[in-house]
Every structure is written in C-alpha cells, then in structure tokens.
Amino acid sequence: MNPMELLQLKSAWDTFKANHPKLISFAKTVSKENFLDEGSLIELTVTNSSGEAKTANIRVKREDMEFLRRIQEMFENSGSR
Image 1 (cartoon, helix red, strand yellow):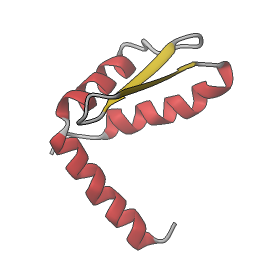
Image 2 (cartoon, rainbow, N blue to C red):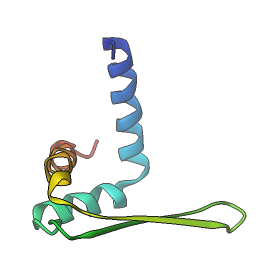
Image 3 (cartoon, one colour):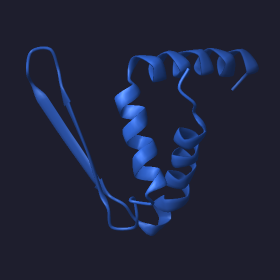
Image 4 (cartoon, rainbow, N blue to C red):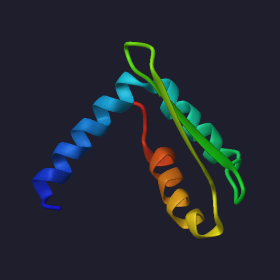
C-alpha cells in the first residue's frame, strides 16, 4: 500500500469514528474488559434499507487471537476526534 492510500484510509477511518461513536465505544469496552477470548462467538447482522437482513458469525479460534488482539489495539489507540 502506498503512503497516499494510507493517508486516505486514515482520513476515512477518522470520519467513520466520528460518524459511529457507539461502535467505537463498544469495541473499546470489549477490548478493555478482555471479554473476547477463544471460543467467543462474533455475530454480525446487516439489515438493508428494504428491511432484508443477512447474518454471519464466527467462533473465535486460538489462531484468530493475534489478529483480533491487533484489532483491539487499533480501537484502544483510536481517540475520539
């Protein structure tokens, strides 16, 4: 990824954080409490403007923990701006 793409991504991330503070707050709370562990179920449901919903979930495996730890750090280090 080139530096310009990183700058654009950072700008988009800052906008996303400002637009969706509840999601950021939730993610920070889950990571601070060390709530997420091996065997946890992560579920995501998307409902479109027509009311149709799609749901997917994953059961966290030991191999997932390093990746999820890095995601948690990203949320912990993202200040509200």
